[in-house]
Amino acid sequence: MNQLKTVPQHAPMQQFSVRHNSLVIGGMELPRLVSRVGKTPFYVYDRQVIIDRITELRQNMPSGLKIHYALKANPMPAVVQLMAGLVDGFDVASAGEMKVSLDTPMSAQHISITGPGKSFADLRLAIAAGVTINVESFNELETIAQLSAQIGITAAVAIRINPSFELKNSGMKMGGGAKPFGIDEEQLPAVLRRVHALPLDFQGFHIYSGSQNLKAEAIIDAQQQSIALALRLAQFCPKGIKKLNIGGGYGIPYFVGEAHLNIQQIGDALALEMEKLKAAQPDTEVIIELGRYLVGEAGIYVCQVLDKKISRGQVYLVVNGGLHHHLAASGNFGQVIRKNYPVAIGNKMYAEQQEVVNVVGCLCTPLDIIADKILLPVAEVGDLVVVYQSGAYGLTASPTAFLSQPSAEEVLV
Figure 1: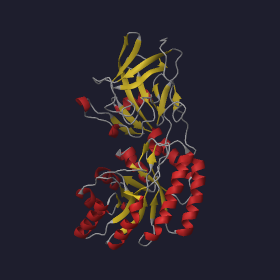
Figure 2: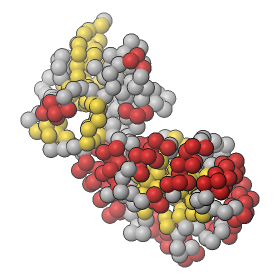
Figure 3: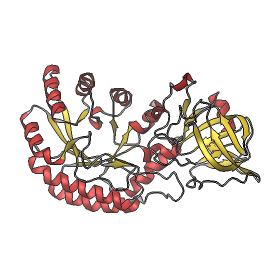
Figure 4: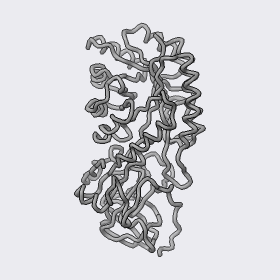
């Protein structure tokens, strides 16, 4: 066994079973799934894991709460089609995602588009489709009103707020301080007066303060502050608040020491806040917007060992994938200090012999790392390396054109 000192192992993965020493996805053992897909590398998403996650979420959230899926986490059309029958709405971040969502049975009135740089073409598409536009600036508000008049369709709009607070302990903070996202909280009274003067269909507010959070207390605090902020602004709203999107931020565990989010604690606290809101704004629909939490744990990335080599005492498994398919796993997508994603040898889940290895991709760059000094079952050429927690921010969040390597496949099983 290699005696190199290992980095801490990842969070435990229990969402998939093992049969005949192989990982089972969608009821199929991994080697058979490879034959079904016809090639490696690929991403595979297990529909039952997604269904179970949403079922569990609904059981723990207040009954009147609406759950929206954020397509940016995973816009694969088959996944989005599945989601259309499971959630109450979609939130998209581009015209491309909007077109994918409009191809599903989801009604346009339950779809919203967000983003600080929407083009005239994006806005025209959204207005014509009847999709709610989350307004990010004064200028965008005026542009929407002008386009709405030109097209002859009253645009549905909500104001995205950049709150004074932030989601503490979040992986990415998208609220608080100076931000390109939304309109600063203190500017809202003036903005809402202007909305009232324009021929627009005002829907309400969108408040998204952060993402990838595993602290229930932090999410509860942000949700409480979001609802309190909406209530303070209600007096300025034309015809009250129809919809209040309080964002998401629900995280999933990746690394050592991380545990699953306590959603029952969040749901219990949110129920109390929604009662307060209902007393003041009885017709307001409260929405949470989740992406990673719904699909992240349902997906894996699968690649194959092309070569095994030793360099000055270190073992390298060279695979036919890499950062061009899975930038996040390489540590180059937001990590300050690189940590290993959960990794396994998918056709050798249990083995008496293990060794410390470096799993690297096929690209000509030292950044192409799948796992660094990790203890795995002894693998050989042809074995299958699996990266867990890959159902969100995987292929579409990666530089797929880098070095002109072949793209990875995606399947839903």
